[in-house]
Length: 96
Image (tube, rainbow, N blue to C red; front, side):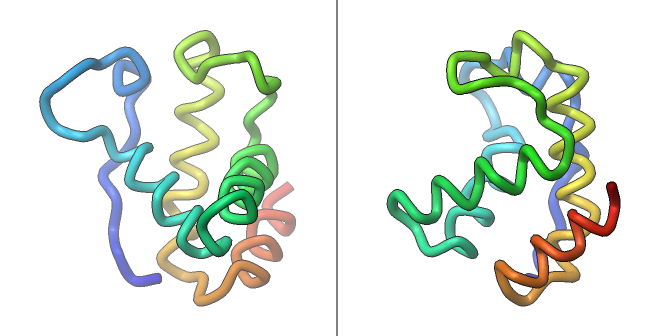
């Protein structure tokens, strides 16, 4: 993927309206890379967790905005370097 994403800010998780926050664009890119549908959503969730997200299924990003910000910015840094789902997974695993 060659697209660059804007840096994610903690306030992005609490915004309504206006410009679309970059974390949503990152989620879209992850779902596309993972194959859309349920598979794409599962891949997105896996990548966000690999990047450091610690919340469960019922935890919103706004509840842990600092953790979500760090995870999405970690993905933001490496996503343009990955050309496949497997490559992104390997890159994120190597950051741990």
